[in-house]
Amino acid sequence: MADDKKILFVIPARRGSKRVHRKNIKNLAGKPLICWTIEAALPLSEKNLIVVSSDDEEVLDISNRYKNKNLLAHKRPKELASDTSTTDSVVVDAALVAQQYGFEPDTIVLLQPTSPLRKKENIVEALQLFEKAGSVDSVVSVSEVDHPSVWIGAIDKNSIISGLDLSGGRSQDHEKEYRLNGAIYVISATFLMQKCKVFTPVLRAYVMPREFSIDIDENMDFKIAESLFGM
Image (cartoon, rainbow, N blue to C red; front, side):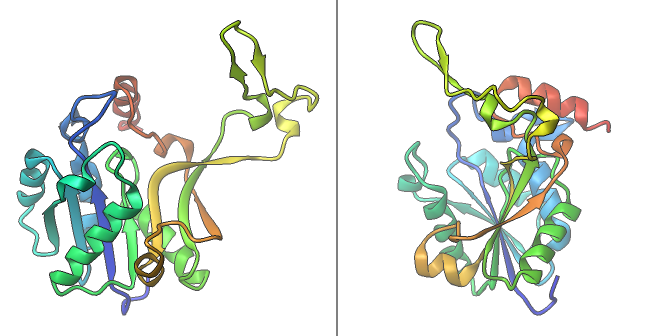
């Protein structure tokens, strides 16, 4: 990473969760879920800033326990804490808070707490890709999908599945495909503040192993993540 670039790490942690109640503070491998993401970013916080954006007082309290001068626990406005709030608006709000704090970032890194297996090294490599590509296009972390997308379809009320293309043969005959894994997003601060968007028209992909790409969305995901921590 370029030492002269200021980086803002944004960790959004809304209180509400439809599938897992208050999942950001749910215990995973001995500590609240959000701690794994905070601790992945902390080694990179020197000269940079981490903003944990949340409407959950317990999340903010957990963040403040780190007592790191480069970590800011920000209570987000109520209008940014609903089911309809967009990631774009939350990240812009965090950037504005950073500016009020006297920090003017060049680059913004969005780290969702639902990706606890993402490591500091993954963040560094994504930033290196961003800089190598000219620090213009957003970088998104991805992982390889298990099966070709042509094998995915929709099922109607009569149990009929449609949209499949079964003419392609074996899975290994298809080109590799990738999905967003939600772990890391790297954005130009200038683009974000001008367009109020996280995603640029062209996206660069940082590929992560599937075993580090678990996205906590259901209770089963916690169990899977627990088993993967021993790897």
